[in-house]
Image (cartoon, rainbow, N blue to C red; front, side, top):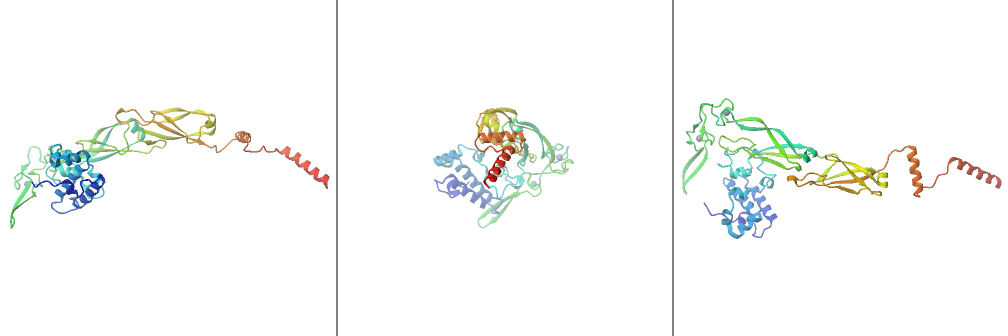
Length: 386
Ligand SMILES: [Zn+2]
Ligand SMILES: [Zn+2]
């Protein structure tokens, strides 16, 4: 094993580089060396080296240990898996390479015999749409997940029951073929996946009738899921081992159930609080009133005091969304909005006109009788003058 390179050197950043510089450097280099982008034979190794450097330097704890004790500080504390845990490479590398084919970067590093091997089943994603009410109350339901399962007939071996896969004669079961070549620099040994058995190390003489020798079948599997009350939009539940099955030996992938919460016609969510607008009449606002408001699970009352202005917010404690892990619930904020009446009966109109006069906004109009008497007097006066 060659000596391990300095992580800062690997990423080409200074020892005092900040988080952002490290991320930028990693993204730039990862793009160049991503095995899906580069055909260079050492791309995968290089990419792994970059990713490991990033995993350590982007984590304040790990970085501090590395700064203090070097590689020894890291190796003694973390397993390879621990090193990469908590880094969302998919997110970091979104927009180039990867993503397709279900080879997660994690699989690439820990897939056993390299990323081309059938080591681990694919991770699957399943989207669940919830109403806000369902998100508030939690939900236990069955989902129908189309996935690949180990063939029940041959138990994943691919061989007809009663027969057994036989050790591949070409690679003698190793799944790899090595070829030694003499070159001016000495002997070069290259190993490639065995073409006869596809790297599996075994061949099947009489294939299973159920799966035609694949060892795997497609199935819609009903899976029971429990969504906790207070779940947020975009959160996911990880169901370990519920993704696609791998070959007879590999581990199944995981199933990610992604929660999508539909917008609610009345409530807007902000973390565990809910916000709503409540129309009230101007008489309710002026005189004060008890106003009934809808909540997620029923109704509640707010006391609108006399003289309330439009836009005033009333808070109903504990009437918002439940918090995860039973940590109580948020609040419901009710913002009142004063409605202007659009159509009025003649009596309502009269009362409002009187009110306007009372407020001094209007002069009392002369009625018809008063007007005609006045006109008559004016005419008489005019006549007298002439
Ligand atoms: Zn089968
Ligand atoms: Zn073989």
